[in-house]
Image 1 (spheres, rainbow, N blue to C red):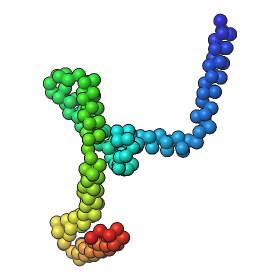
Image 2 (cartoon, rainbow, N blue to C red; image 1 turned 30 degrees about the vertical axis):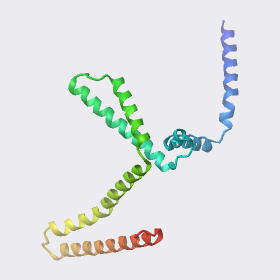
Image 3 (tube, helix red, strand yellow; image 1 turned 135 degrees about the vertical axis):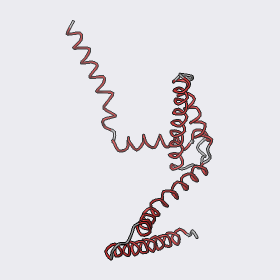
Length: 183
């Protein structure tokens, strides 16, 4: 009885080894690149438009991210209804509704709208990253008392740093606009 198990396990391991050899010989970097590429190709929606879609990989990635975001929002909303209304919607129905609405949203949202969302969020975060230190220095200078010359010197240096920072941002923006031909 034990010899039959040993023979079966040996044959199973030989079969598994023969099946795994092509995977072991494949380049890992190419495998990962192909897997990521196939996920992004799903987001490009080439399978819907017969390969003539003008969407690029960035729009495909944004589509996938939008689908995930919409699913999370719908699922969490339906889960919140369940807690308030004591199991009004079963969990599997909430998941199904969330997935279907997320797919519909991702497929029928035009690429130009997705790019507009990206530009809007980029502008908001750029303003926060640039305007945050400037607003902080302004608050430091205007909202703190100046009891002696040491504090006045610190405030003066903060104002000088702010002027330098704004000049550097202006020079960088001018260089970028001349390189891209914008404005």
